[in-house]
Image 1 (spheres, rainbow, N blue to C red):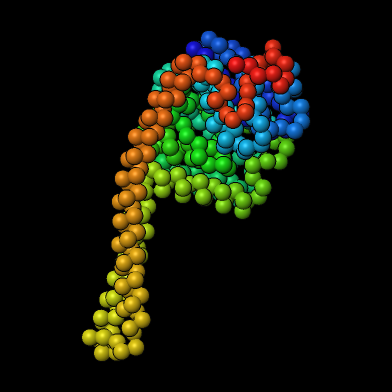
Image 2 (tube, rainbow, N blue to C red):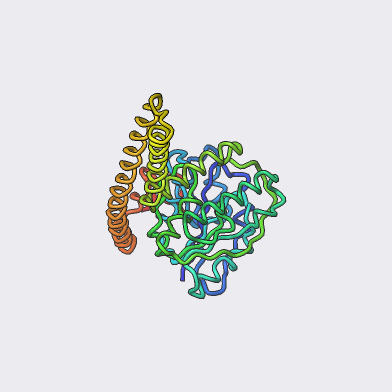
Length: 339
């Protein structure tokens, strides 16, 4: 069984050597452990530092594309390198590498397909009280959207089987953590959480510019993913609320007009009621159409899964992993493509 530990990096020349030194190279139940660095267009010596510190592979993206796309490119690269299990961790050594065997244990035992490290965000001291409350609330929202019991939705410390990686689709440009959990829940993937330890932060987060930025981007990601996988529920709920508002205004008009006989000046309410009822009905119909489209999307996802599986099994050209990207190994020269 082959494990590949992937680490997305952006300007991590100072932190990546220490992170790599702590990674376990022998794990019970695993035959081979390799490390894949995804260099997200770094402008410093991240690649050189990673190779010098013992990285087995480097996927170098041609430009800075963001964490979500770098994560997805790394999964594709790890699959082409023959990974049976993939572990994702951060370059800044936020997660304790000694917990990787604990992360892998449920997969090795055949109990789970996706395992996520639980930092205990409700009591994590490095988070401010506001951030702890937001993280807890966000995890509850993602739990509702995915149908899973999720204690730590934003944890990037996770392990997955080859099949889960093949089925993973990252559409967001912001982060992969929330979206992929909602996908996993709606695909009935077996997901478990294990308690993990964290290390003191070495630098401020580069993903979150502030609380407002985090809330805005996370909310957009959750709503988009939830609407994608449960469109009928979303549009039906919105349409029903709008339709019932129209009905309430219509009933009000009738009561005032025929019971109290004071409806002469309330024709505007009748017009608004009609508009709301029409909009509510149309929104419900949009939900039905979106639900039919969702079935087509499931078919396309299955086709994509089978195509990716065939490409990986055939060890297709690594140049297809990302546009103008390439893989380096620790024995290759920097900047020389390895095909």
